[in-house]
Amino acid sequence: MYRDMTLTVVMPAYNEEPNIAAAVKAFLVIPEVDEILVVNNNSTDRTDQEARGAGARVVLETRQGYGYACQRGLIEADSDLVVIVEPDGTFRASDLYKFFPYVTEWCEHVVCSATRQCYRRKVTRIYAQWAVPNRRGLHLQDIHSPGD
Image 1 (cartoon, helix red, strand yellow):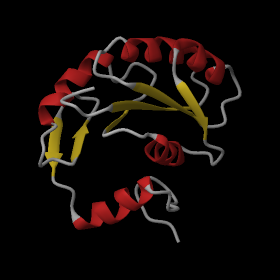
Image 2 (cartoon, one colour):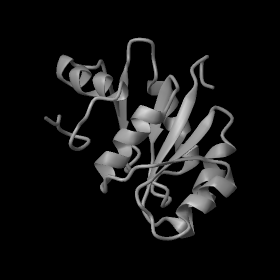
Image 3 (cartoon, one colour):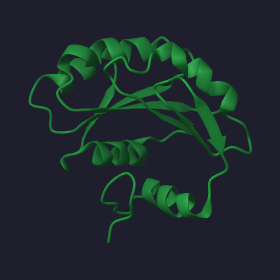
Image 4 (cartoon, one colour):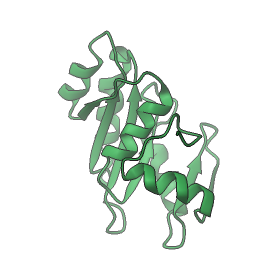
């Protein structure tokens, strides 16, 4: 928990067996992290078993693609803060501490890139029309554009 806000780390995963357990364990040692949610995107290896064994909650997204896996994570996460990371080590668990200073009461959307740069924005009307309904279960074709 961070400032009385719960935090879920979402990991979209497709055939991440070699990396997933270490990634889950690395984020679980961060005291502010309440849950690791791995979204299994039809992996054919042992991604699911490795993630569960490391302490993650695992959900299945049958629609293939990174965007669908991210959407499923946003829908399934039941927390105040959601951070989407790659389980391949691109985003280190300790990098969460670079994210926290950008979380403020007025800020509803923080984007941090793999280059360790962050910016914050008040959610715009267009983004809110996409993101907020998506968390409520409406269909979107991919993570960037609304579906029919």
